[in-house]
Length: 70
Image 1: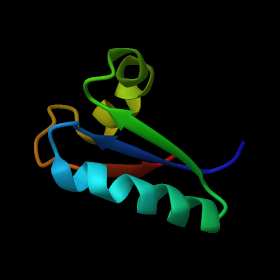
Image 2: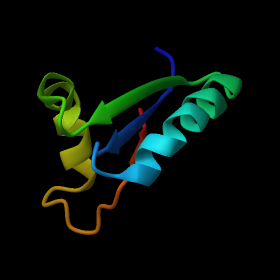
Image 3: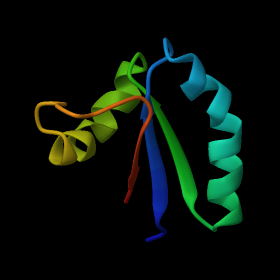
Image 4: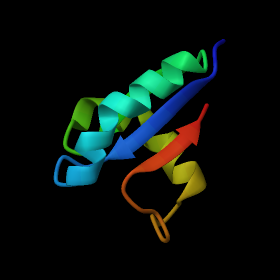
């Protein structure tokens, strides 16, 4: 199983959107997979929700964007 960078963000976050290209490029240069999870994409969010909540159970202290390795 390959290591992946999972980015949780919101479509309402302008910086998150602007950084996506660079996030993907840097992840690829490091040999990582890149998964961009937008909170508004309910299908993708449901798939990765458990990972996010394992680190931020009540979302306290979480910011946009939030990056996790898995």
